[in-house]
Image (cartoon, rainbow, N blue to C red):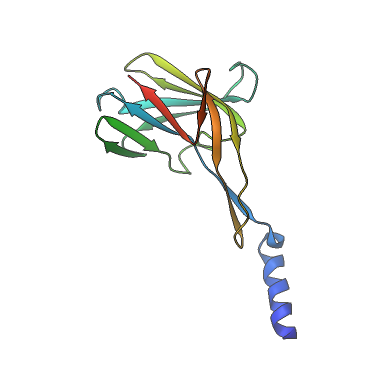
Length: 146
């Protein structure tokens, strides 16, 4: 029993003091009525949260080659890989999605979420609401109509 407790404490100390790593959910754009050529490439820009898109941070070019495009009827939803862009359209920033083929910019900001209880050494933080081009949205899908 003593050896088990000692081993557990040693393992926790070895792996960052038993801190739980949290995974932040992202907002996934769902392009409705766009042709594949319209959205084969788009740009995501991060901005400092709450400053009216004045201070640009990271920028990523998203292509059908490096992300997961899922097509259903006339809707293409893009699920970001967590390593594609630091933060990948989640809390802590405001965001722009720019579609060069349409010369169109979509604003995503005011993201809110709820913390789920940690499960062992991991917790998930889902997005429950955000604002898209002045429209309040529920969930984590940004519905973008052509």
